[in-house]
Length: 243
Image (cartoon, rainbow, N blue to C red):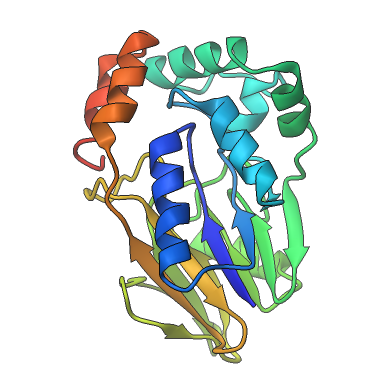
């Protein structure tokens, strides 16, 4: 079975459809795992939710998702994120609201656990260094964990008690073995690794590996919609630069 692993769509319809089309052309997939932040920042929350539902995606809630439906406060958001999430909240249908409100914050999908942030703080903590990685591994009941939130792709591995972060290189299959791993497939809707192309991963349980890809999309189409919605120019411009 081939699983499309994606995260941080952030209401970017053009990026999401480009990822799904690219994954289809590269051999297809049998299911989707979404690691949260379906909405926020971008102009098409409803379309993105609808497409995930069409594919029966298994999805967890991210911090923007819970704020959008009033389950958490936007107090910690910067001015641009706050403006975008307020627009999002006002543009969700009742059905979209119910869908986001019902998302779990963690899913076990053997041999993976799926979560947006960390297993210590499911929606808000960034897994970027040894402490947050250890906190997740201490709570991990499966062999592997998939996380999002940082908008940065990486592989974190545990080897003999040591923790190391390594590059999750593009187009290079990473074999899955006995070592416990935390993987981040990168970001679909708003990459921040100075590469504006959406990033995603494919988990192949027959080959027993994960493989990361990137794809081009029509950034200008998303930006035009954001301008029409009068979103902050900062959010619009950053899509060009992957920051």
